[in-house]
Image 1 (cartoon, rainbow, N blue to C red):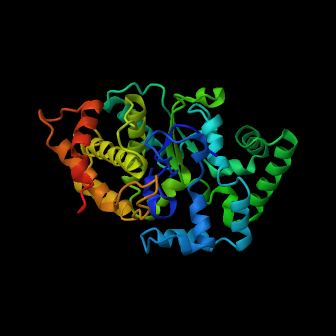
Image 2 (image 1 turned 90 degrees about the vertical axis):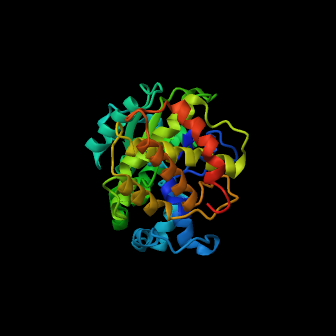
Image 3 (image 1 turned 90 degrees about the horizontal axis):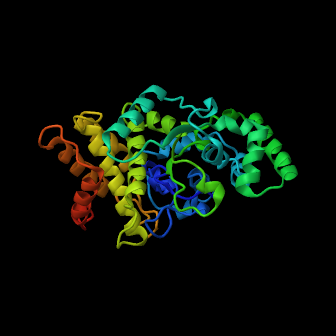
Length: 357
């Protein structure tokens, strides 16, 4: 259901969402196919209906999820699972959003994220001039024309069926108080990187490189107490996936869960290196690692799943390694090339994922 070259759709929600990266990747480290893009919120709703399949917990996310789901009735949950409402904000931003369109402008922490995005493009030595940073907003669900457009292009509805379906979705989202007119974070609890390179479908091949930040992600990070640094770390993580796209770093001898773990731990490391580097964000190392510990402790018990992102301890090891690398840079302030950083990471990877990690 979603599009090619999507990566890291918010690994932070690993227990329930199986992701920061949020989308569950395919069985190899190659960017996922279009059928793999769906809102990670599906897992939240499915867990509410049948918690028996989810073995992790309790986690720091439990209270947040319970608050979101506690507002919803069984009828509301059924609506979310039987319509396209959870995916429409993602598809709308991916297919039709542009950085110049105010409908897709960042809202939460907009200035800070825009500044960080500009700085990331300066910091890393890849061609990032074509990457667009934009937001997805849940209030798109109230716009019948935009919803219908997504249903036609992404889901294959006829125009007549899409118009009727879009009206039903908009009316329901507007009438259910818990949906908050689309502003409930469950509709936009996602962040991801996208590249259409290698896509054979002309529609998706024509989409420019993007990083899309959901309003729900910002809400979530603020709710768990890391709103000061969390959004910037997520953006840096997603930018790291564009480094991997650009340098072909999804290719490796690894397959399945090990391949995905490698690329996600590498993105964690890229993000941390940039965040603490004197010529990056120059954030306090302790605060960065504390923030990362908060969302890494969500955990990931799906060790055999292709979407496995590494255990909390493995992710912390990757981040701590990258922080030390940045702090020990010689000459002082020297920035490793993106390619050199990847080579150092791959050399260190066996230690990061050792049995005691």
